[in-house]
Length: 141
Image (cartoon, rainbow, N blue to C red; front, side, top):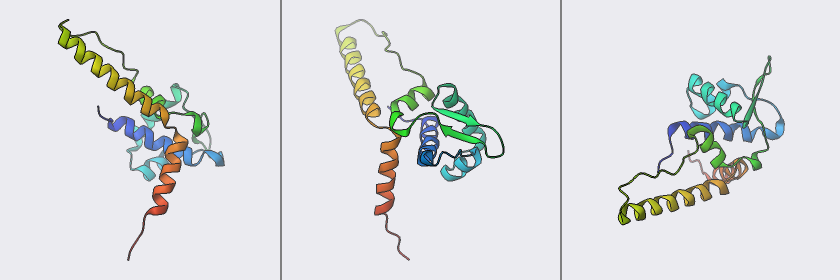
């Protein structure tokens, strides 16, 4: 199992929006892109997908940009991954042998475990983890 760059960029963008959620002010694409080193055009496509799935909303005008559509504590990492990657459906491929059934069962158990972990983290949790890690970083000159 692997985190795609597309999902990683979506998570990073939403983390920026979550950090600004309390202010209620939208962030422009160029601000998010600059903070997280994400190509503007790629970020624009990701935010459009996230908007269609109801995770972000856009605001037009001179002070326009993007905001989270819900509170950070209600948006799970699994929601974001499934929005970007699509919902993975179990497949019934295999030779039909006992061994292929065992392999398929183990794979489905692993997928359920991964989904459980991703569902246990919200954007709020990620913001808190980021703050803790930033406060423990020491800079030496």
